[in-house]
Image 1: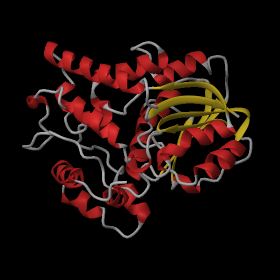
Image 2: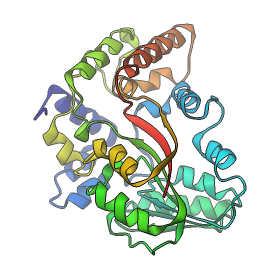
Image 3: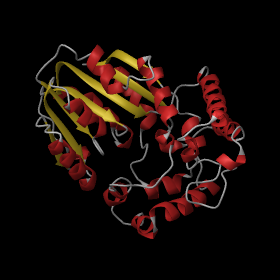
Image 4: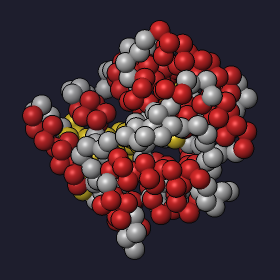
Length: 322
C-alpha cells in the first residue's frame, strides 16, 4: 500500500488546472458523502481519460460483444432480453444515465429507476428523457447506499461503473440485491474490479511505465498542462481517501461475492490494467488518429493483451442470474 506518491501531487495540480480551485477545496469537506459527491456532481468535466478515445471503445466492444460496432446495451438487448417485456430495472449509482437512457429507448422496459446522489447529472438526464419522450424512466436523487429494495420486484439490477463505490458488498449483493430481484432476475455489471483503492502491484506499475515509454513525447503532454507524462508512480492511499472516500473501496471483492451468490450467465473481461493509467491525462492526443498514432495504440493494445494472459482483468462486463 502506498501512503503518498509523486503522482498525488501531480494529479492534484492537474485537477486544479482542469477543474479549478473550487473543486480542490471541496475535497476538504468534513462529510465523506459531500466529498464523494464533488467527484461526480458536474455536468461538464474537463478531463482526458481513456474512455474518450474512439478506438478504446471499439476495443471494449470487440472484447465483450465480439464486434467493434455493437455496444454493451445493444448486445444485452439482442442476446438476453430480446423477447422479454414489462421489464423493471434498477440502476444504483447511475451517474449521467447514458446507458440507462439507451435501455429506455427499447419498449421492453416498463420501468427504469435511476438512483444517484448527483442532482446535477440526474436533472440533466431527466431533461434528456423528456426530450426523447421516454416515459418508462424515472430519477431518484438519493444516496444509493440507502435505497430500500422491495422484495422480488426488479427483473434487472444494473451497476455501471458504480458498484466499486459501495462498501459492504457482501450485504449489498448477497442480500439487498438478491432479495430485490425476481426469482429469475438478472444482475448486470460493467465495472472496475481491480485492486482496492487502485493500489496496483509493483509489476503492474512496471508494465504501465513500459507502455508509457512506447508513446512519443509529443503525445505525452498532459491535458491543459505545460508538462509531459514521463513516469507513473501509482496513487497514494491518503489522496484516494480525501479525493473520494468511496473510490474502489471494496472493488477486488466484487467478483468473488457475485460468484458466491449468483449463477454466471455471461462474463467478459476487457482489460484496462495498463491502458487506463497509461492514457490518463494524455488521451486527447488519440481522439483523431493518423498512421503514427494508430501504430502507438496498436502497440499499447498488444502490450495489455500480453499482460492479461497471466493477470486478471481490472474491468469486467457480466450478466448473472439469481
